[in-house]
Image (cartoon, rainbow, N blue to C red; front, side):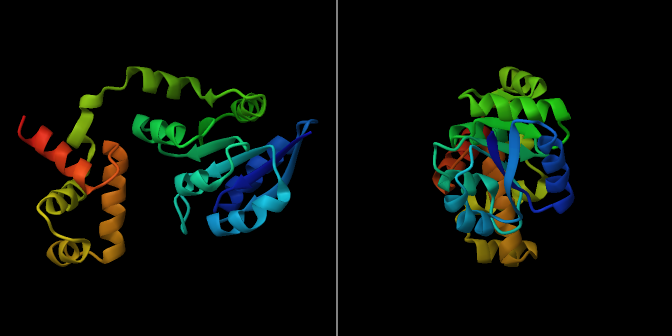
Length: 202
């Protein structure tokens, strides 16, 4: 029996996936959680065979949670964001599968079976996206607001100063910064600054 834990803050999505997987004779849902905090508290005692984790949760990014889950437990990441940058980041952090929330029931079941047996599962269109993606997308991927926030970060302003200049609160500035860094696949302000200098001065 494959023991599965589902982590998603949307109850309807979680329940739907649980019902689909419970139809399989060899699969059992042993835990459902709506937050990263709840998952951290309960996961050690449950000892699942597979975790299915939503990337976008209110209390914490699912990728941060992924980093704290033991590598012996294969994780499938769920997202509405199918960008090649996000997929690569999830795989780099140790995810064994990546599914769009628009996936079919068969894809969901196949993903669980694949990672349970030690494989890696990506939906076919996501695999194609990774293969055909180009690194030169660069700054063109950013929204106008994300670009403005990054531009000011590169200029040496901190989050509070950027918020005052753009009329945004602290959390919003950090959200734009995180989104931009994810899209650009950079980890810190130094890498962000280097990328801006490289691409803006081309």
